[in-house]
Length: 543
Ligand code: FAD
Image 1 (tube, rainbow, N blue to C red):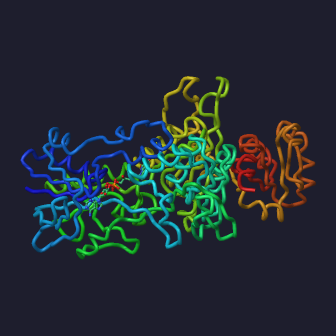
Image 2 (image 1 turned 180 degrees about the vertical axis):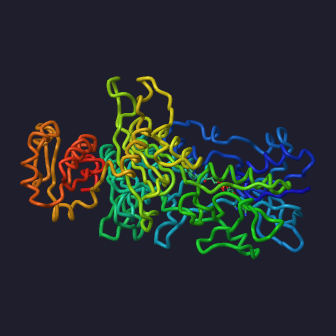
Image 3 (image 1 turned 90 degrees about the vertical axis):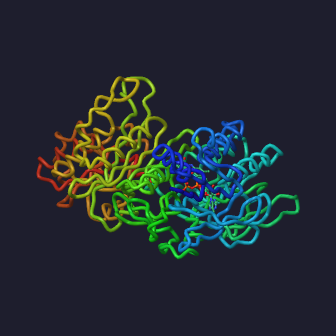
């Protein structure tokens, strides 16, 4: 059995190593057009920041180490330039010229390429993407050489990592994002928290604008021109406006490729040719919640798909599960993480959205930090997705919820999860448990919610009731709201009924806890009531 693998990083190298572990007698050739195999792309921003001091630490293996450990024939500087599917050969352009490499099974793991919009000036030497070791080294050298002003184009995961790394090095940063918010995979109420953190660290965040070009400046630097007329001086520009599947080789060979350019594979990673498999960023995967097919460029799914492909190439009946898109990023002192579907993906799906701001550990133990958690729940109780932003404990909550979604748990099952607890680590009622309690209440009608996005409609048609304490009210409130602290509500119900004058009552507090208590009092009094999901903390983030 001869296996040829195109692409020697996450999916390709996972497949090669797995294939060797399963088949000692297989001949396994890995073709990598770059100088490195098995390098830690995810670590590149941390070399730029200086946290990973030596770029060599990003190189997890060399062709020699892979030969000695796994008996792999790894060829760097070797690009697969064509596939002859009938002859089952790959045309390789290597250091010694071109040749044809025969295969029994071929795995395409070519990854993704950075999207480069057709803008003037992107070919200037100080405009770089952050995709390879050479990119990270080049950016770092420019910073070491005195670059002090950077413009980062694109506020996705990699763009934010680049911003953080550059700020870490003391570089002045403008961040430009075409979407109306940073980190578009987050719902807006959480994206606002990330934008605030960036601003607090001196990053000038410019959303809703695009670059129209990069010009050379008389001082030897550059100017990034935006479509709102702004001109941003820069010594370096990081281009991180997204990636697209690197599927040109597959498409030229006549393999099925979808409208977004992703290689079409089945659950066993098989392409439209029974002798050719594909895995990783170049492929379309099935989203676990929405069922949509498309690329999800993340390292975990790529590694696992490579492993599945190896199993399948060697004859096992295997299937990659649908992908949740679980991801996490550090942005200065904050962590933001997502799993499953976000609000935009659920635009056409009826669902509930829960907002919670619980502490990452017990409130009575010093140092509790809020975990701002958003959970989307189907009207049938299905757990659809979650996101969180905070200073501590964010990754843990999202990983638990990702596991719950994968296991097919309902939102109400989160209430029953028995999670590790001692005061320095969590709470007897962890934020994940609390999400389960709120889901139970919402699904069984104990709690009706209204949302910050509905504020205008609520103002026009309902009494807004603020049940926070006097000091909170004094620190800022909605001008039309009636203020009755929740501890006084039972005694002052007549006031509320009079002010409502037959209208519904839309109650809020700071986070949604006290307004829930008030809601139950109002419901018992026969009023049409709903509690603001996430309270003023969420409202302030979006208004
Ligand atoms: P790649 O890892 O991109 O490997 C593909 C390889 O194929 C490349 O080396 C390429 O040179 C080679 N190749 C392509 N075409 C050919 C050809 N014709 N012949 C020979 N070789 C070819 N994901 C996360 O989940 N978490 C993170 O924190 C994270 N951080 C990231 C940070 C950065 C800066 C970057 C760039 C990516 C990050 N990712 C992260 C994404 C993750 O690295 C990718 O999802 C993952 O590497 C994809 O694996 P892959 O094998 O499909 O492709």
